[in-house]
Image (tube, rainbow, N blue to C red):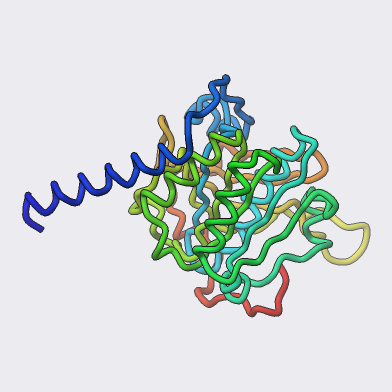
Length: 276
């Protein structure tokens, strides 16, 4: 592309963003409330996750889609514990076909009572983004969780719309980029944070008889985008649903390892009929 073409493209993008900001209207000024996540990340996050921002979650590999969604739902449970309203879960229909549908008893065990969740299945990504934006602007939900597979329409302008809607409604947006495995560092968006998530084996709990029992859900988390961060660091997190908090293994990434080594094996999608 020529220099004049690039300049014209940047000017067009600036016009689009200006129109989005004008449509959103002035945001109500207030101190940002931050929800602590884990000691390894909180300093880079300015104390925790902002409750009026867009936060992206991407799987490290195709087999890590369920882990990425589980991480997003754990964050949602943390936000719901701070607010009386319900959470909104917006899913693109094709995403559930590729990665499997959410499982009610599993959500309860994860720390999310079904009475505090509203589910929306959108026919396509554009409808899912619209539903998220409208819900965020309303300020009604305690958190808005989205799972999107088709990311062709997810641009800098689209992410800017979600960010401004989150700020206007003072509501956190947790967006799972279901098909963005391996792309976390190459994406450009207006999100405040981006995490790359890999599935990890859970610790074992000794049983009184027979085989040991599986322990808390575990994942490898890497903070890819934040104002201050160490993109090379991977932290093992265990989700304690009864406490609605993460336990972290600060020694897990010493020596440094890559997400490709800790990701679960297998590149194929989960069957649609298999719950998560």
